[in-house]
Amino acid sequence: AKVAGKNCYRFYSRAMDQAVERRVHLEHELRGAWDRGELSLVYQPLFRVSDHTLVGAEALLRWQHPDHGMIAPSVFIDVAEQSGLIEVLGPQVLRAACEDAMQWRGTRAEREPLFVSVNLSPRQLRGTDLPRLVAEVLRDTGLPAQQLHLELTETAVLSDESQASALLSELRATGVQVWLDDFGTGFSGLSHLRRVPIDGVKIDRSFVADILRDPDDLALTTAIIAMAHSLGIIVIAEGVEKDGQYGLLRERGCDLAQGYLLGHPLPMSEFMALL
Ligand code: C2E
Ligand code: CA
Ligand code: CA
Ligand code: CA
Image (cartoon, rainbow, N blue to C red; front, top):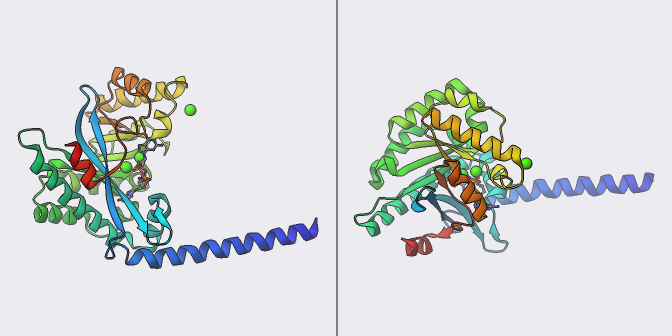
């Protein structure tokens, strides 16, 4: 047993070294990935639930690595965040998404223009002057502010409520909408919604996944919708995969939805073909 334990330890330690090594390597490669054209945005459609109308899309980052193939954002966003690389990458993503949304406008003629929703990582909130960046990108690309939505995670906003509130107010003053992402996972409680100035909450897909079979998740989702609406906040459901979920969300008054049932994330050209 002792020997096995020792081997086990060795193995574990080597595995950890490899993980660290891999991380450093990943960071190094990620550094030039945007300029090499390996990073791109895909767009997942968002629908208004009441009349099933396409109203916008969420921009999601993809890394097409020359050797390792497609690397998921869950793997590399973390690396970008911890290394500080996100401070370069984040603004590039924001700008590219706004440029793409300007292109959608061209195809929409008389119809309602679509918004683009962009994810911001916690570090982007703490870092550089975000409201100024947003204003600058809107000015440079010509995208009207109402057509840009920003998704911030609950935990990023909750870690320092008063500072976050000031920042959110400044952001909203530029005319963009601010949504709280992954809502419900941070256990912040609904009362929190009263104190942070936001336009929408995105119910985390772990709740949506279970609303058909778990009465608690349905009750929670229904309560979030009621509470949010009483505060003038809209509700977005993510991870909608089944007809039954979509129907139930409509019945409970959920405002917007996205998920594989409604549309997978698509490269720009394929998304444009939908319009
Ligand atoms: P998120 O913001 O919660 O994005 C939703 C994730 O759920 C996306 O994964 C999307 O592809 C996936 N998804 C959409 N519909 C369904 C569904 O019906 N079922 C299931 N099971 N999944 C669904 P993705 O693209 O892998 O992104 C993962 C996370 O990486 C995102 O989670 C977001 O936190 C982060 N991320 C992606 N792009 C960016 C970015 O440009 N900047 C930052 N800071 N973070 C990003
Ligand atoms: Ca998101
Ligand atoms: Ca989410
Ligand atoms: Ca559950």
